[in-house]
Length: 318
Image (cartoon, rainbow, N blue to C red; front, side, top):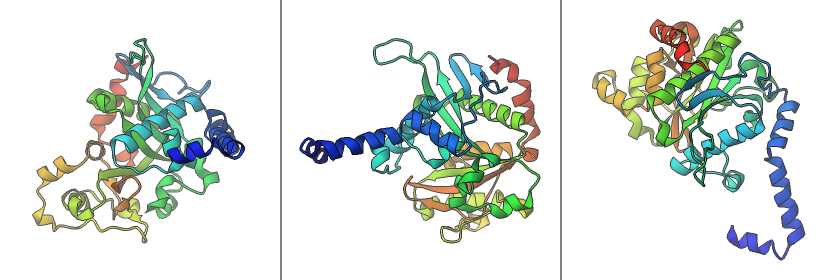
């Protein structure tokens, strides 16, 4: 890569044009243009969700208000997924240090912002420290489906519930020093406010277990299979060509307490809310994970958590 950069000094026109094209392609202005073309980027503006959705001390949760803030969320995702974890960036992602895909242009991006963060020279410089990508069904019509459909066959689920409004949750990450209960609560206050506003009936999305060897994840995968698989109208199966069996251990061999300790905090949080999971897992070699599908009808959320999210709203109000 370094050699190619210096070669560019001897071929300035070609390299310069290529570099300019890449910069233009991934600039905030191009991101906005792509969103408009796809019918996305309905930035809140005068919408009821345009303001603060929650605040705790210096931390605020709200939706991104433009392409530059989405850029910041993508930079955070790159830092967590590629620099801290084991995801493998392509050339463009490595060059721009951003985790970005075609779905970003039609999504809302939930942000946690630390307004007390310090910049390089010691001054106050608000920083995006957490994010969630929120994709509504109407927003992805022109893309031909949800991101999740590359791993799980969710078409039958959507067909069985034509009257329901679905929301895909994805690309969630929090900067390491901020992985606390307070930050997670703020994110969920934001998600819940979003669900209430858009009258969402059900949420779904991929959740990841670190590692690409299912046998090394036999205990948590088997626990999910035996105790938390969605049934009936909510059943979803991994895509046939990517399906990895989750029933790797018999039910009688599973130590539930140990299995719960092995589950990532995000998956345990979904379980507490009342979520169920798809049948079969999917190995994502690019991100170095084994993915399971979370399915969470709003009607299934434990009443205690709904009361907490509703009743505690005042504490998180701006």
